[in-house]
Image 1 (tube, rainbow, N blue to C red):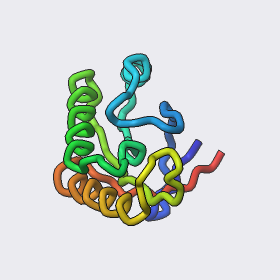
Image 2: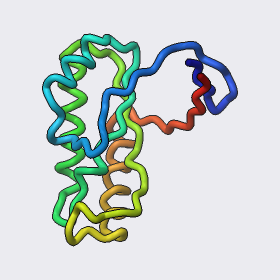
Image 3: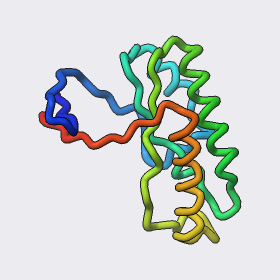
Length: 129
C-alpha cells in the first residue's frame, strides 16, 4: 500500500486498522491496546471520540479521556501519537435527545481542544492498493 499525501509525495509504508464501528474513547478494550502495542507502529493516528458525544456529554470529559489514552499509549512505548478530528455526522438514532446542533457544538469544542493541546493532524489520504 502507498500513501499519497496532500503535497503529492508518495510515501511507502503499511497501514493497519485496529478499530471497529461504534468504538468509544472511554471503553477501548484491553486486548485492542495489547494488539496495537505488539504491532509496534512508527506512527499512530487516532480518530476517536464521536461516539462518545451524547445529549448530556461533556466535551471536556471526552477530551480528558483522549489525553488518558494518549498517555497510556506513550507509556506502552508508542512514540508518536496523533489525533485526527471528530468528523461530522448525520444520524443520531443511537443517542436519544442528541441533535445535529448539539453534536456539532460538542464536536467543534473537542476538535478545538485537540488542535491546541494534542498532536493534531489534518488527514487527507488516498490509498492505492
